[in-house]
Image (cartoon, rainbow, N blue to C red; front, top):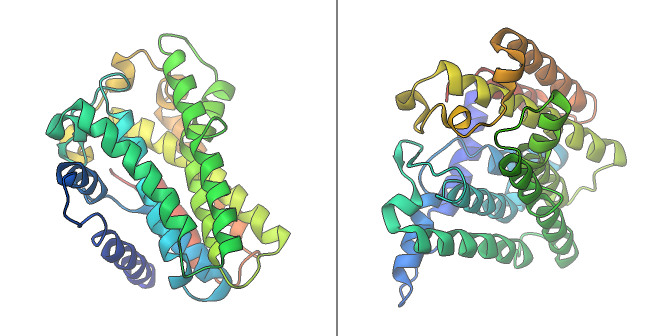
Amino acid sequence: MEFDREYREALDLAEGELKGCFREDGPQRELLDAMRYSLLAGGKRVRPVLALKFCQALCGEMEPALDYACGVEMLHTYSLIHDDLPCMDDDGLRRGKPTCHVRYGEWLALLAGDALQAAAFERLAGSKRTSSAANGRACAILARAAGCAGMCAGQYLDIVNEGRELDGEALDQIHGWKTSALLEAACLLGLTASPVEPSPQQWAAAERYARRLGLAFQIRDDMLDVESTEEELGKPIGSDAENGKTTFAALYGLDKCRELVETLTEEAKQSVRGAFPRPAFLCGLADLMAQRKN
């Protein structure tokens, strides 16, 4: 019950701030509508919650990380819009709703994603809740997670390897960049926003936590693509198999995947125990991600 209360508190804080974004009028109103359509489409808000709660784990407050939390969710949303495009995964549903390019057309969806990425960095760079020095570090953290040593690299490897049989090491590399990198950035953004300086040990603990959480998240995602339904997931199932992609579920089987998720989740929890004075929520979040149904 305490975990649920804390999650709702962090979720409401992020959601309330995001709802105020891109409401201005202008000749580009349809572009702003497309940005809001995807940004406010729902979801667990795992990345902004991580940013807020890692900040709180260090300094006792979430509010200093609010702009960083919004920025990381904007960047995540941009990546989903582009991931769904016909030139990528060509998916028609996201969170039970038509994807951005289905709703608004491909060219406008592309621009909406581009604009959300730019808005993410604008939000970080201009935050008044944190110092200019912290904002510069935050931009560097997010840029690394988004670029050619992060999500874009992972997406490249994911697409270029379609139709090829991959081993576990190759899958770890792809999803370490495609999935874990932004989760890691969210955690580190929370520490960066904190007025209390993290120790090197706490920084390393956040990195380890996010990397294990990210791999466990992706393995669970691959399992749900086999076990779940389109109605439960709110997006098409089986698209990876149709596109000739090797998944953790295809490589290891569901039983082995369950073991891997359990092991990685425990390693994530061990990373933050002892490193932070209040690790209970972060451990609970790792458990929630391991057990999720959508």
